[in-house]
Length: 398
Image (cartoon, rainbow, N blue to C red; front, side, top):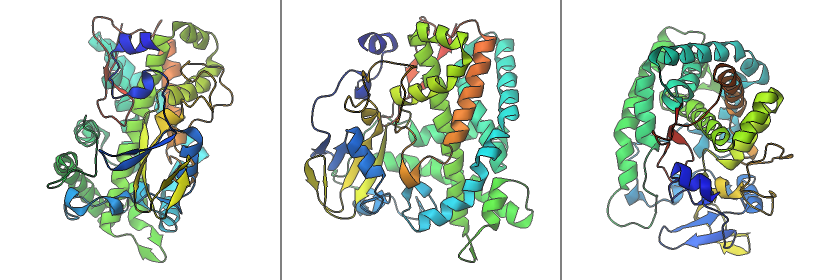
């Protein structure tokens, strides 16, 4: 574990990568004004009980810390909605991610992967994130939504501005709106306006794409308002690529860190799904998710009052020794591997099947086309600075 931390200069804020944790499974953070959940079974309880732990976290954040609703609205964001509205909205897009629909994307995923690797070969150097791990899922989700994949530089600018920040969020700060949230306003507005233009166009000229499906969808006999459609599309565009980008980068990093495991995968491609699942556990992309308590509740031996912000650390839960034997070992033979990287329950990641397919196809082709997956010691790996995300933003390969 220490060798990995030193070799890749893993940021100290990614504490779960720096060795075993000591302490209770649930703790209160006085400075930040929120509760942290670290234990696997406690995390399961939180994500599996939406009646007690609401996804609407904005309700417990002091209003003076938030931008105005006109500046930043989460209307239509599935990750912030509770039942029964959540089920109705999720059903609208679930048909776009069925097992058959996702499986039918495999030839296109393979085609795009080869095209991107060909382009990188022509340039004579290969940086995994820029050349493959970012553009591949962006192209796929953009084509599904019906927005130009050629605009992916815009999408990256917005995603970086919204997610790649190095400050931790706290709800006990004084003064005006939180600086991190304020910094997100402009990219949020730009992305909102971009997608609003596509929504407006689809109302006039429908196409065979996911934005058109959202525009034409009805809930309880009524069409969705533009604000919900736009935020829905925004969530799909962001979540539809960020997870896969981190998943693919993290998986290649693991195979670089453990060359014996890389040789095992090369010799037997049938273990690629196991590689991806262990990568998701070992380097959990979205390391944390937030909930708010709607009533007083007992969890992990402590009492959490109502209307409290609860941060569930999936990355720590996925390394809980009470659930996983030798949790700091990257083990392709780990079976079962019930990690929580995609969440659990009603908010289980809608795009998980697509992310897994993209990771499997891309990794298989990478192993075919490159004799070894080895990082460049003269061009260091860079991690995403965000405390609640585990992923590389640069991974140059020899």
